[in-house]
Length: 272
Image (cartoon, rainbow, N blue to C red; front, side, top):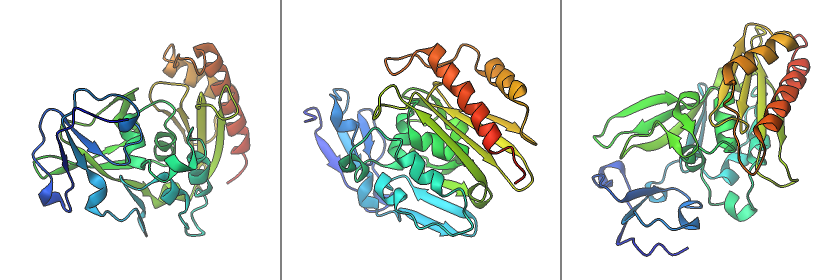
């Protein structure tokens, strides 16, 4: 879609070339949502793709994902053999309601900043204890956990002029066992519930609930709880905050979330 209110496009090659933030600005990663509908309040676009960030960086500390890393690039990661959680990356990439064209343009950072319940990069990075490195317009930076960043649909903790620079997934999370469940009303529909479980070598169990709720929820246990305890904790914490839209009614989302939670608990309940 043409954005006919845009009067200027800035393509910086480094942080020192980023312009001072002003009302009417928008940062562009892939732009797959930005160009999908009118943006009448915008007057200037700042293209982050020209900054040349390395998409993926593997180290002893884990994985750093540049905000401008595309879904296709992330899916193509050749992870170290010890990262037994790595298949979760492909599972979440394929949870996108998107064609291969979108895969090659849409970015991980963009999916996080949209903060939609069905955003699978939110599911992935929350389940693997990801944290965001944010660039402030004054030249500083701060970090925040993905689980704390997303507040609800199109709502997050990003301040005016801030940029998501990268997402870090710690090595400890990448070496956990994982279990993945996802459902949509249609075969290729938007996720109505996407539930991920992880378990580390000590036996600690974490369940991450996304898509069926407006923002991510995590449930942490020293060991897999009983099915009844898990169900009661989910119900008590989420209460009436199940998401409601054309992709699934709250009662159905709750039922599928509890069903998948019990399945994941059983799958990861064996000795690590």
